Length: 425
Ligand code: CAO
Image (cartoon, rainbow, N blue to C red):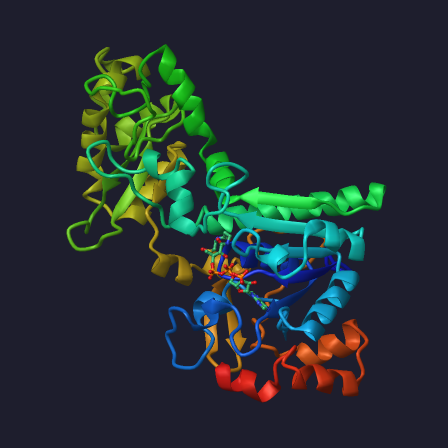
């Protein structure tokens, strides 16, 4: 079976997390992703958060599967010429440098279009046009400036960032959609286009429901927030702790073993239709006849007591047992799964969402595979490339350079020498 993006070639100038997430997704779908890295240095994440000395970090390997690596110094004269050849041969150029970096290398959008009018030029930046457009941005900056941090956490505590990398990986995912949309558009128009995605915008898109609530707030208190009815609302959407945010009340409650296990918790949603089953399961069938408790309206002002009663029951059982009891009753619930539990979960291994990858320098490690499954287009996970591993191969097979030209480019420092790259690794 052919991979969905077979035949698409990506000139990958990305680094750190947001851009590499995007190009990794495209690579999983079969695109030929040529990762361009500075000779002897490479993507900074190769050396960040290393768990093993002198071996590409998990940070790098887990974001750069299925790619080929070419080292190229685009700030040398022959490096620039090679870069132009790459632009000619590729369908998409993806980058997430600090604002203006590619222009400073001599490659404005106008120049890139001149070289290849069919190319799609896709970028991640921290901010869109406006007062902050020149700022460098990392994950947590985007979470804070995109509306996530101000709405995450408890009302009486500081803003919180989340573990999910919604700024980096989230924006990479948005960018990948922009790229395949532009590729589709090119089918009719024959032309490439510029695709940009700002991390602030990507995070705000994921916080869409909070902008919904901001406007609802003008018409009265947010009844599904824990501040209702006893607390106060200010002018901005407050942090809502573990409230569900949807129309159905939910909360995190402790389960058996919580005293020592930081993840002995479960999220329980008290959906109206399933409430009778839930009340019976926790031994409070008396609520079903009592007008003080038997309607969502009656329970709303005292949800803390409802969840207090639920918790009295959940604290007597472990989170998986609770899930097994509540699911047949149609009570939506989610055990708090640790990353350790997810790593060991057989069903995630079976679907390829968690995969074991073998790497020549580090041996076997676990990674998250492609979470997007296509029925007709397989997607497998191949190890990340070593720095410059495919330099000669790409120079020869993609760009058509002969041995003498490759040697000359190496002597001029436009591409890295294989030895120096091995030493840098
Ligand atoms: N050959 C020659 N020079 C190269 C090169 C190559 N192959 N690859 C990169 N460079 C140069 C760039 O041209 C740039 O040089 P100038 O500053 O002279 O223009 C320089 O390397 C460094 O690039 P940078 O400014 O992007 O890198 P940084 O480490 O200073 O900043 C980051 C990193 C992530 C803050 C910044 O790239 C950024 O804001 N990116 C956009 C937002 C983003 O994606 N953030 C998420 C990152 S993941 O948390």
